[in-house]
Image (tube, rainbow, N blue to C red; front, top):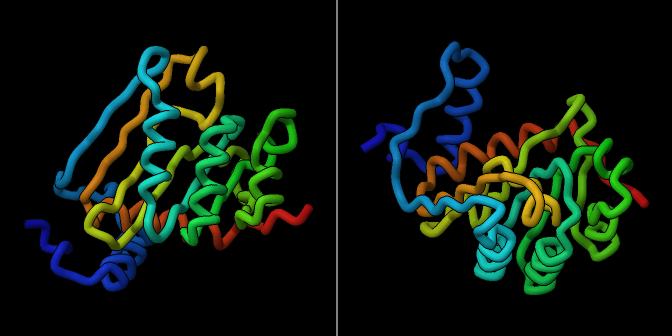
Length: 186
């Protein structure tokens, strides 16, 4: 058992923040839960993401670089309409430079969106679903939430479920990025 897994999530988050401020080595967590892997072209990566979003009960935190996939965007809006807390941090340059970006549309549908104001490229592709719950999921990989990512690019996706420490680690990182992000106002 990882010695940090005995602590409540808020204690773990505080320890993680303190450790990351002084750590010379990346955080290492014990493997737990399940891991699902998919690759494009070939696997229905977007379908896996949409299915995971349909199962969200409490919260979905998103970090996105390029976001053009209509079905994934609609699944986020649908989750919000079901009462799930959905929040997005997006890369400002991609949102402005990609004509088919769904980021502004998400904001127009009532999804709170922030634009990362600190990094040259906010290149994370992450979703944290139901952090703090036993079935928490982290979705990550090279897969941009785009039509091209599904149909034209060679991409990978990992869905890691049931590892509370991992989900909280990703959620803490999301919160650190939100601090320096600006709300999208259109």
